[in-house]
Length: 401
Image (cartoon, rainbow, N blue to C red; front, side):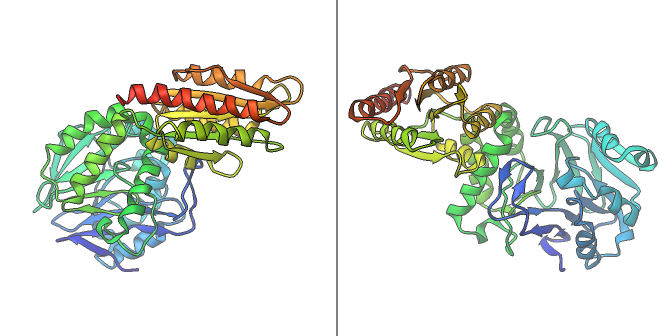
């Protein structure tokens, strides 16, 4: 298990997990993921971040190809979440470092995870702007609170011009390649969207505050804790992409999600889609029972309109629809325009419930919900089509078209 030298005396010693497809319990990761950790060899040898539980031996094996593990003098903990620090106690026991650096906010989290044993650890809290010299290298710490945990920070080495960016700029990709420019670009940026819109999105205001700090640094490489490492001109590309995603400016695209029992609501979904498309708004249709909610969020990365449909079941909305909406609401995307529709047999509450839910998310609702009993006929399909057209008109106005 060889380490990979990414710059002079700086090595990747992480783990590629090809079988981890349920990232953080809520985001489906079709390609697995990577837990990245890094070592800098110098007068003081430094390990930056560790890996997820169950993978500590792999990290130690890679580390041993560079230097004896007991020669690690310092450990930097940029983030205490378990996919980065789940084996921290195992690594500390093996390395016996002189010091462990983390943010001030990390102390409480670290104590919560590791309990009494942490009291014997040589932990030193750092703040933004603090730095340490390890010989020919300097490490500068920058807190990035709520990006995406209170304890989050990044570490910058000015001599190698590497930003060790923790969760920021990461992707869920398992690959033999270590660098972003070695991967197929279309898939790479799709994975970036997937990661951002399912994990980082609620913290977009913090992203916009942090990006100027990143841009003030002289950076040749951005080394995240998940996925591939950015180098050269791709560093600017990913920073610019983060700004675009964080700003969430109006996007001329719509997503229609639905669940159905006997295909009636599904037919209405396609009617709404036709109204959107024929008014000049591209549209994606996703069944919530056949698509994971993280796939729906990734589709919303390019959209500013959302139509939601469900039959009425037990006087309310089908569970998969409400689950998807609850997930979407928690991530706080800027959905500018909404629409609701559904079919029913005898009570018909679901379209109104959906309308109220979307209104609660501060979506503008340009039309009344479409409510159809039994199977939709021609006039019913015209109503669904009209809903799509009204949504499109409202969205295009907001996009300035």
